[in-house]
Length: 535
Ligand code: GLN
Image 1 (cartoon, rainbow, N blue to C red):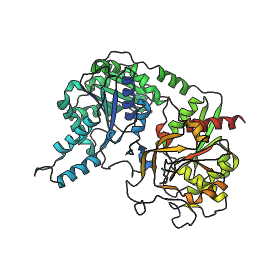
Image 2 (image 1 turned 135 degrees about the horizontal axis):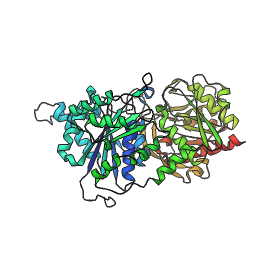
Image 3 (image 1 turned 90 degrees about the horizontal axis):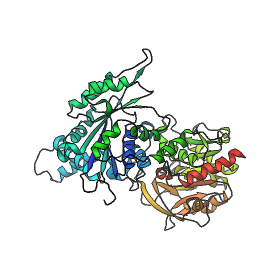
C-alpha cells in the first residue's frame, strides 16, 4: 500500500460496540471515525458484523429492518454499509458484511464435509475463530473498523464480543482500539440526564473482558460535562476519551464533532499519526446542508412503507445530495401508494417511485407514473419505478390489461415478466439479478446527457424485466428505451423523448450517490423540479 502513511506498520483495528440500546447511531459513529482517519491521510477499511442468524439481508422485512443495501458484487447487506460507502466514498463487497448465519452455515457445511477431523465443533473456538478470520480477511488498510451490530450482552452477539476480545491476543492489544457507544436518556419529569444505564452497559462490557479505550455518549440534546465526568469515573476511562454526541442537524456533522473532541487524541496516539485532519470538504458539506436556499423544491415519493424512513435511506440521501448540488431547499413528501389520488400527485414539483416488491400499492404507483407522463411532471423511476412506468405507457397505448407478472401472473399483456431461467424460484432467496451490471445508453438520450457517458455501471436488485415484445406499445404510450444491457437483451433505461424529465432505470443508482458527489439522475430530477417550481 504505497500511499499509506503508516506503510510497513501493522494493521490496526477499531472495534465499535453498543450499549443500552441499538439504533442510536453506532453505524454513523463508526463511519465518522473512519472519515476523520481518512482526513488524516490514512487508508481505512470497514466492516459490519451482524449477530443475527440470517445469511444475508435479502429476505429481511425492510419496514422493520430498514433498506437492504446492495454492494457492487451483489451482496444484500445491512443499511450501515450504505453509511460507510457514503462517508468514506468507497465501494464495499460481501467481505465487509459478516453475519452469524453466513459463518454458521459454512461451519456446518465444513463439519459435514469432515473437515474437523472428528473434533467437537463449538461456538468457542470454532465460530469465534471464523469471526476473527472474516475480520482479518476484510482488513486491507492502515486502520480497519469493525462495527458489531446490536448491543453488548445480547444473547446472540456473545460469540462476537468474545471474538473481538480474543482478537487483541491475536494481533496485539496495541493494535486494537475499543470504542463503546452508549445512550444517555434525558428524563423530562426530573429534568436530568440519567447515566445509570450507560454505567451498567460499561460494566457489562468489562464483564466480557473488554475495557473500552473511548466511550461515545449519544444524547438527544446537549448534555452537561458532568455527564461525561460521571461516565469516565464509573466506566474506567479518562474523561478526555468520553465524547458527548447530541443529535445533529445532519449526520455529516459527526466527523467534525469527533475531530473536535478528546477522542481525536486517542485516535492520534493509537495510529501514531498526529496529522491534523483536513475536514474542509466536510465543513463545506455541513454548511450547504444547514443553509436553506430560497428556491424550494418538493419531491413526492410514492411508496408503501411510510413509517420508517430507513426503508428508503439511500434514496433520501441521494435526493439530498442532488438538492445541495442544485442549491435548492428540498422538501420530501411521502405519498401513500395505497391511497394516492391525482390531487396528491399534483401537489409536488417532481415524483419519484422507488424500488419495491409485491402487489401492495402498485396501482397507485402506476397512476403516479401515468400522471407524470401526461402532465410533464419530472419523474424518476428506480427499478420498480421503471416497471410501473412501462405498465403506465402500455395502458396509455390501449393495452388495458398491461401488467407485470409479479402482480397478475396470468395477464397476457405481460409487459414486465420474469427473466428466462428464473421461473419457479420466485419465493427463494438468492435468485435475483444482483450487483453491478453495465448498460449502453442511446446517443443523445436524456440519460446519456445526464451521465455524460454512453457506458454506465449501476447496482441492481430485481427479478422481473421489460418484455421487449411490447416495445411498440410502450413507445406509442410515450416512452422509449434509452439504455440496454450490452447484448441488447435487457432494458436498463427508459425515458420520455418529449417530457422535460421523465427518466427511469432498472438499476438502483441511489447506492452510488455520494454526499459530496450527487448522482446525475437525481440531480437531473432536482434540476427539472427547480424549473417546474419556478414556472
Ligand atoms: N419487484 C421488482 C422485481 O423484482 C422490482 C424490484 C426492485 O424494485 N428492486 O423486478
